[in-house]
Amino acid sequence: MLWLRYEHMFASVSHLQPRPTLDPKLLARVRPVAAASARVLPVAPALESLFGSRGLQRGSTVRITAPRGGGGSTLALTVLSAPSAAGHWCGVVGMADPGVAGMVGLGIDLRRVVFVPAPGTAWASVVGELIDGADMVLLRCDQQVAHPIARNLVAKARDRQVTLVIVTSTPQQWPLPSDVELSISDATWSGVDGGYGHFVSRRATVSASGRRGAVREHIAALWLPSSDGAVAAADW
Image 1 (cartoon, rainbow, N blue to C red):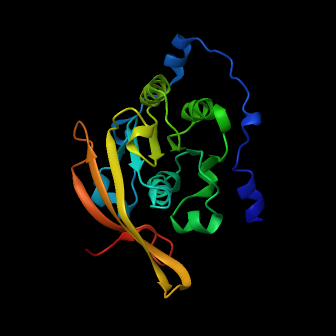
Image 2 (image 1 turned 120 degrees about the vertical axis):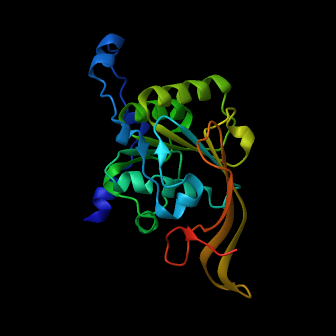
Image 3 (image 1 turned 180 degrees about the horizontal axis):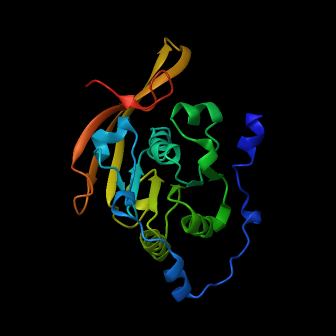
């Protein structure tokens, strides 16, 4: 049954055991060298206006900034949808259970994603553990992160060639500049008329910028999500 398989995707911090320390020279010898074609992770077609069709560089950091309820989590989960569908392992830390139907609607392959929704004070250690074994790690960050912790996680992700995606409510919560910066504004839900009905779709403006040519500066209108549950381009 689907709900049984889904339940096992969620990890408990208490299940994470310390790993033995391995000789760095041994790790360097056994670590695979990515071919040029594998140095990028795919992006969903709906996000190509933000990232371009070439994909996401491995080892890069992506920060998504949006107020609570502004579409940050939806956009972040869509970022990992194409990598998971392509067979890459992904980890999600600090994000409440978005629901099976919602994630399937975004195109996520649930068999390739490990969720740790409530890491508590051990969140940095959990992210570090996932970086050791995943291709993309998504962190929902609702607190001020100390500069040394952020620097260590970014350095580890770069060393392991893992793409690190950070979702924050304000820019100040993550103290380092990222290779790709996405900012969501003007998020508006539709579907409720006169106080009656259900929220159906959310339209938002997404601004993209980057450093070292990671992405071009661009502003896009997106449905986060559209009425069918997927992320899609919206008309201006």
